[in-house]
Image 1: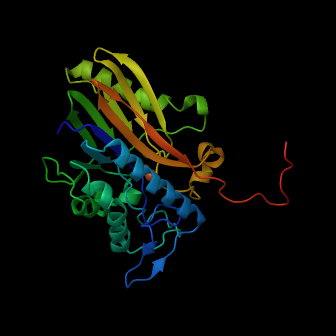
Image 2: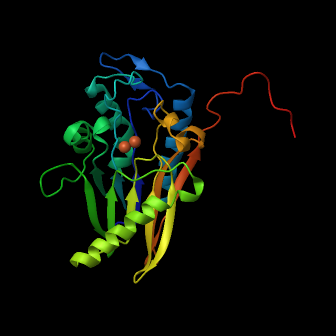
Length: 280
Ligand SMILES: [Fe+2]
Ligand SMILES: [Fe+2]
């Protein structure tokens, strides 16, 4: 459907103790509420700002919501930092987080996340996607590996995975390479090259544009909605990078695709220890 705006999000990881929750907290089976910790409270505040921004930008307009996977945290790698390993808990809370954004959307699409989080065959994500009204693909799946979407005459290629980097100067490399590879494949086999490539997974934002015969083509990565896990600290970009959350609000206006990724810094993660810095 040719809507006016694409809301381009992913990596909500609901169920992790540093990820977005419903406003009052993460609700366990039986009604116990795990109130948000300070990082979650900051991420929830950012989520509320993002949703308000969506309402402001889309006032009187229609939008397509794309969730690119890692909807829930899942149960993985013997990790002990989920609020609940009852997947029904994680799924119901994810539905609660996403329901307003999905209800106001003209259409909703889901991609499949990393199996460690999403479950094999995205089994933890299918239920969430169906519950918030996602459109199934031709095989009856409510989540798919790749969303190849036609929108206002443009070809959008959305999927979960993309390479990450610990180097600021290299942040555009993997998304740009993805666009370049898709262009090469399209030329090789006579397929349509995408105008917009968007990815999640790496929880880090970048937007890079490059000329094309339709004006510009774009390679985009969107942040997630989760604080830094122990796994994030194992890689340089995760360890030393600024934690930020957010999502894309891309408009089609005046015949042009106008990409935008709303990003909110979540800081400080913890106060300094051993005394305050002197004012400079
Ligand atoms: Fe993720
Ligand atoms: Fe992922």
